[in-house]
Length: 70
Image (cartoon, rainbow, N blue to C red):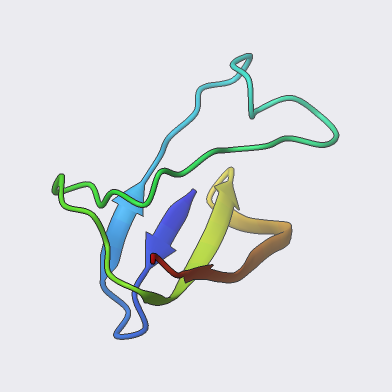
């Protein structure tokens, strides 16, 4: 799973190997804690995600995530 800011910068990437939770056929769930790969907490805003499987975007594997912190 790759998460990008609206400028197109990759801010988070999580790779899952075959057989691990999140890589099985059917419904899968991946948790993101709002921390960028660089270690900093991301700011409020809209982020885009892509789920890549075998080098291609998965069916229904793209969308938006809204981060809002109080």
